[in-house]
Length: 193
Image (cartoon, rainbow, N blue to C red; front, side, top):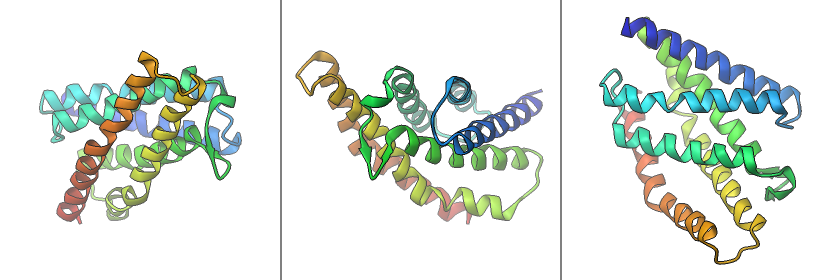
């Protein structure tokens, strides 16, 4: 039963992320209501991964999984709340565009790989992509998350309010956690490739 559940979970999320990313690419990264709903469903479902890790259904560490899921869900809340004109842009791209690309590619590959792994089918090129593309996608996603959080500060007027202080502290937490999570992926790459 657990196997069937995990197969369905990974397949549905690979499809969900593919639909979301396709809509965004063909829609010019405009994040309409349907795309936002798909993003909320796909990213929200990732909260189940904390449970999967805690129950030892997967080999992922609980703390690492929690940090990754928490940071993304916090950012997702703000993707829902921030008006498009509040988003800070770098070279014409805002944080939502960056996380859309980074999260989507990462998750399509990751969930697809997990699906085939559960079927005991090794897809070498998928494994290679999973443990190589993170080198670029992880920093890209973190940059997007930072831009979204900085957009909150911009929207609030850069004042010393409780919300801005909280956002500032959250931004600072990326400093110790990003290297830890990034190095974890490098160790996984060495082990898998």
